View 1 (cartoon, one colour):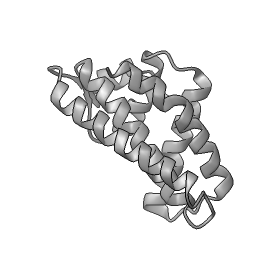
View 2 (cartoon, one colour):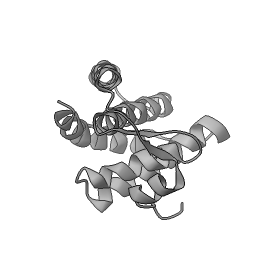
View 3 (spheres, rainbow, N blue to C red):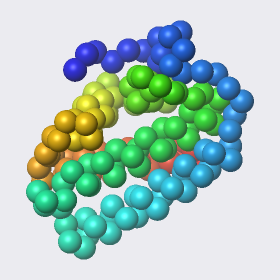
View 4 (tube, rainbow, N blue to C red):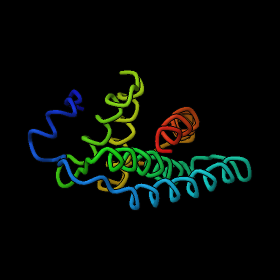
Length: 147
């Protein structure tokens, strides 16, 4: 994995564009993330995490986090699109006060999710549990910013 670029670099490159604040779309993304978070929580409490559902849990957790980051960006008039958009969204975590460790974990999550989607990478229960721990820690924090 390459080192994470600064959010301003993504702006300069045109991957992130400044736009009008889009509260309607941001609220929609927050609501969708709430539903997904509740679903992940119910799976975790019900059937639990295992090697068979690890990829699904990781993908859904990633999407939940990214929906909140996108909502926060939209509330501040930013939108990322095209090649590098997901990296730009992860780099935005620094702008909203997340630690370098959290940003690195989110970037690793992005990288592994990409590996699953495009290269057939299989993740295990242990990694999925780490992702759930990360989700449970960052989800409330980002969600509170999006109010």
